[in-house]
Every structure is written in C-alpha cells, then in structure tokens.
Length: 232
Image (cartoon, rainbow, N blue to C red; front, side):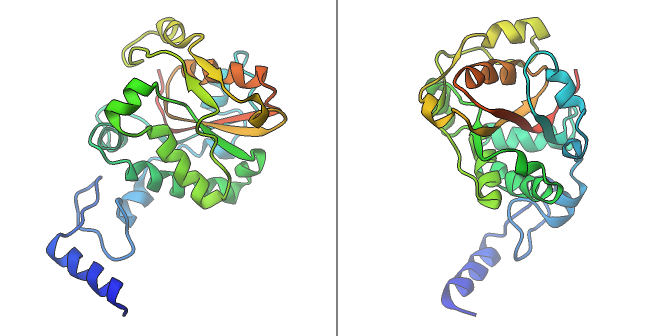
C-alpha cells in the first residue's frame, strides 16, 4: 500500500464517511452512496422502452429521438431526500455519482449511441452564483466521465431568471420558461446529435423550452434524460 492510500485510510478512520441515502458507513471503494443503496435505487428503465413516460410526455411538443430518466421520484421518498441533499445542501458530488451509475445503464443498452455530446439545462447566472453549481451539469459530468462524450456547458443559456417550477400547473410551468433559453454558438449545435439533461422531469416544460432553440440552431437529433421522473 502506498503513502496516499495509507493517508486516505487514516482519514477514513478519524473522519468516517457515510452514505448520503442511508447514513451507514461507506467502505473502501464506495463513494457518496453505498453499494446497497445504489442497487436499491428505484430505476425507471425508460431507456429500454422507446415509448416511455418521458417520450410520451413530450410527444407532439418536441421531436425528440429518445427520452429517459434514471429514477422514479415520489414525494417524501428516498429519491426526493437524495435530490434535496444534492440540490440544496452543497453536495454536487451526488450528481456526479448518479451520472456515472446511470451512464453504465445507458451504455449497456445502446441508448448512448444516439447522441454525441451532452448539454445540461442551464441555470440563470444569479441562481448559479447563489447555489455554486448547476445540478444538471453535475449529473452531466458523471455521464460524460463514463461515456467519454463532451459537455457543451455554455452553448445554451438562460437569458432571464425565473420562478421555481415547483407547485406550478402545467400551463404555468410552460409560461414560466417560454422564450427564456437561447443558443450562444449555433456552430456547436448544427448537425449534431445531442443529449439534453435535466434534474427532475415533471411536465417537460423546461425541456420543451430548451429544445426549441436547439432545433432552430440546427441540432440534427435530440435525446433527453433526467435524474428523476415525477408523474403529475
């Protein structure tokens, strides 16, 4: 065992690391989530079925090639608790781990063959400064690390700050994000197959608002994916 490994083991003894989902101690080789919690995550497996809930939610509104989401979101459930830690308690590493785990599923199924670059739904600069990171981008980083596909972080921007989508109706969600996204460099979009990544997909209003300028900029095919899917 080399010196860095000895130091890491010593730190783990003095400051034990815990799984953010179950709060049990992590063992060597585990990161943020323990193996048991990763295994028990409520996967949707939407990537295995073409006409799934995400695809159907956007059907007729946005001509996506494929749609997917990693986990089922239920109020007061484990995924909500996990995403609350990720989004509001300064734990961006949760998104990275979830992205790496989901990327393995997408790779095995061939879903990742449908896109060549990853584009996270952007935050407005004011919210990004306040939070310190974009949760969709952190998830995208995990996907990118495993799939070896580039992230286009600054190509799509949110031109104005909007209210949170939580507790809004379908119509209000769409009105809240209509015309707030714009492409800054069409050259990076034109004739490319993209994966647009969000955190929680509910009505699909944000994805629709992001997707429209991407197609206008010449995107040749668009897939969408979220960390979680919340049924209305």
